[in-house]
Length: 131
Image 1 (spheres, helix red, strand yellow):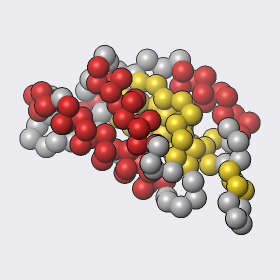
Image 2 (cartoon, helix red, strand yellow; image 1 turned 90 degrees about the vertical axis):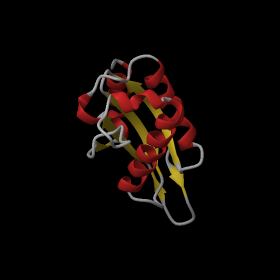
Image 3 (tube, one colour; image 1 turned 135 degrees about the vertical axis):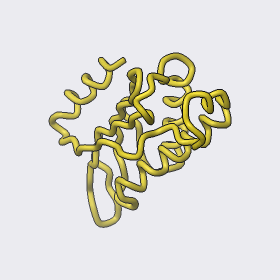
Image 4 (tube, one colour; image 1 turned 180 degrees about the vertical axis):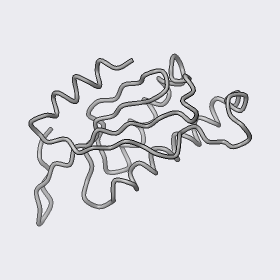
């Protein structure tokens, strides 16, 4: 991961982000998990963040992302969760059998921590070993 340079700043904001499926339902195996991974990478192309690593487990997803300075962490998380949620419900309408009446795939919260450049490889290895 390299430092980004803008007109008046130089930065590297790397984050370990974990999103959890609502009710901890184990739905991320197979097609749904792969679909979400592709969607997050697609979203990153137009949302000012880069996916360094991404891996899924049965009921949650780990990401190592680098973000810009334009938006808050919450805004990046909201973009990822909202967009993947909409695309999931369109592509997998049978998910309505897994949840109550709401069309919500992700739990309300999330985990995020900043990653120093020195320990990014440790986080990367940890994420790669998930699933």
